[in-house]
Length: 408
Image 1: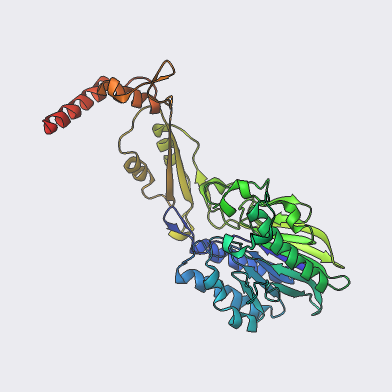
Image 2: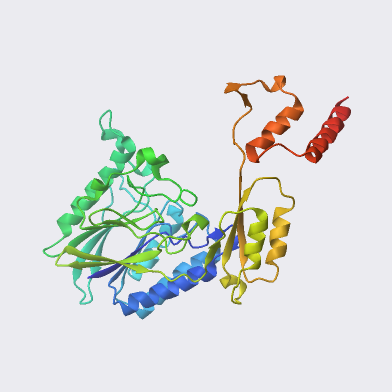
């Protein structure tokens, strides 16, 4: 049996104000073709289908259109999708009965019966091979919020969040293993942050309050393969425990990630191979080397880019290292970009000053004890090299005089 593991689509995502439907359409077209040509038996999407809990209608249309196309073209394909921390559990669950009628499994949240027992039937999905036989069971667990957990029975001193998550997986994987017949595998899905996982700080929201609640990989010890979402960098955390990573870079810092999906091969109930398949980049990201403004403007002038419609134009990040103040930075960069087929996504600015506070010889000083001109000079040195120019000091004195006269 061949499974395709992906996650963190973030449909509806915008990059610094630029919408990305074109890129998501290109990815979904490529994904559908990959599933067909590689004769995949099951597609697993491990959370964060959308970028926000209230995605635009166009993002819902993308998802449903894609699922309808897969079901029409590949009626035997197993489809299992779970919600992530960016998704609305109730909105994902709303069409559950309708989608299940078409053998589409979309799980936004866990559910319990009137006695508080976990409803495992909804979370355990049989995966059929190309002959129609059950080759594996999938424990489809969405992102778990604190309200999903039942830590009352835990002893003192235990981490109630981590152990609450463990309780759910222990129960579900035990039930899944009980349902597995000879030569059937058990696959776990989750959207969580595991200990030792590498974060992309600019685009990921931490799970369960942060690193102190990172989950240990042994939570999934009962599964033959674990398909995880949440971390955008593809990585292996333990044997058979993988993050597929996001298919698109979701921040400029992710421009150099190897965005991919994972083809997982199971035989006779055992994991035999995990093969990464690189996702082609439909829109490039250009990050200019950090430099002073004049050098950055020269680099922009030297950009040689092929014509492309706006939606396919590269994103550009201009990274500046400034030794002194510069006027009208954005206007000058936009003027240099005029007529070039590229979209300015971000101007990142770093200064060459000391970055130190208003201290004298390592001792803190009261602001009331420092003359305004010295405060201005020290603040300047925190960001820039050297002392402010005479012209800049004169301008500050003029403003200071105006302020004092206005108060008198």
